[in-house]
Image (cartoon, rainbow, N blue to C red; front, side):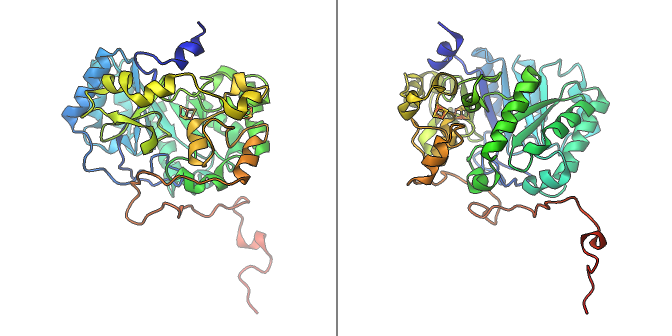
Length: 393
Ligand code: SF4
Ligand code: SF4
């Protein structure tokens, strides 16, 4: 049996488990996949989190991706990180960098973390202008400071995690230069229309010609750039890219959210993809191995219209979450199908599902994305802009 077939029928433990520790965040990015901002008062306690780590150790989950929200905002974050390392569960955590002080960077580089900890700094623009457009004012400087602190502390191979958008595809070489400068590895991910991302997807998702640009760039870099399962839909251009070339939702991928709900995928936080809760469902292992939803996702899937496509074996119809949150059928083409079938499907009649939850801060951002004004040219002085700038007759 090929490895991909093993993955399709599910594994005893997920190989890509994401655990969002909190929905609280100091930022409020326009495209946040989990609509984070406010803490959920039902968040798992420290003891409950320790029990989850104990269970992951028993299941031999070798590492967990920790995110949020901003996970370092939890007062017990550093304790939980050490607890996981002490229990042989490696941690890759995603952060906007706000708490990566020189002291924390030194701790992360120290033998206490023993190579069990990886840090991913989120950066969605290689310049402050492009990054802060979606992540908010000052967030570029925060991320760069964190990268500098990590490098100066001797932390090797941090990750720069980039959500690819229409605004930053033209900056791929600049992102790589930043990674080189800070001794980091670039990790590119796909913008999915999940959470607040649903509200801004039309404006931010890469244009068809940018998909090709991204594909060619990724082909050039090969294994040197990490992509996870982000871009297997680009296999419709020809060759598959390195990475996980299938939708692993509920098969090798899943999400534990801050209140212990288990979803099929971090980009599918919706009641339709809720498998159970680890507090009431007999623990994570029980939910992972026996939830009816996951059993269904692991059964042979029909490819629908995509099975007629010559690229189906590589592309497999693309991302379930991208289809669901754009109101497309799950057995049809991906909304960003490189053969153009997605655009045709998007032009047809469809109903975009309402989100099941929203943790945005007091002024709701859902359907009202808060984005800064993006300048389309480099800043110039008023005089250079127009010889009559500021002059009124
Ligand atoms: S739904 Fe999309 S993001 Fe989630 S596992 Fe499948 S391909 Fe990946
Ligand atoms: S038609 Fe379906 S299988 Fe073919 S490239 Fe598009 S999404 Fe992929």
